[in-house]
Amino acid sequence: MLRIVEPYIAWGYPNLKSVNELIYKRSYGKINKKRIALTDNSLIARSLGKYRIICMEDLIHEIYTVGKRFKKANNFLWPFKLSSP
Image (cartoon, rainbow, N blue to C red; front, side, top):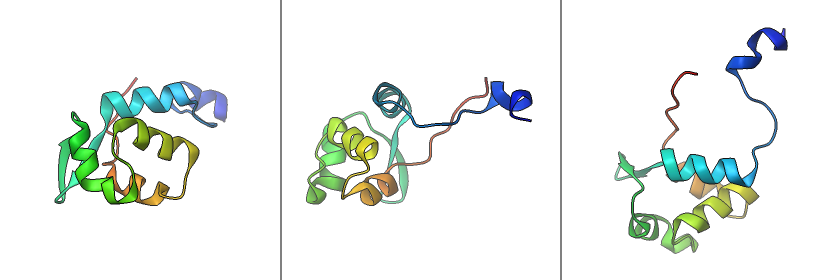
């Protein structure tokens, strides 16, 4: 069954490089209930600064390592919109 759907799905744990590329290329944040592209660290600092997440690298680290503030960081990110293969 997995062989049939293999070209269309991915499974396993993501590596740091893939998390980094995904967040840098396709990340949007929930700011005032709006979908805002994360083009500037000040957007992250204003929304997550109180949790000591002040830049894109802090956000990536928190998501990748599933740190103490993972839930806040994950809720801040808008769901990714991926294109079909």
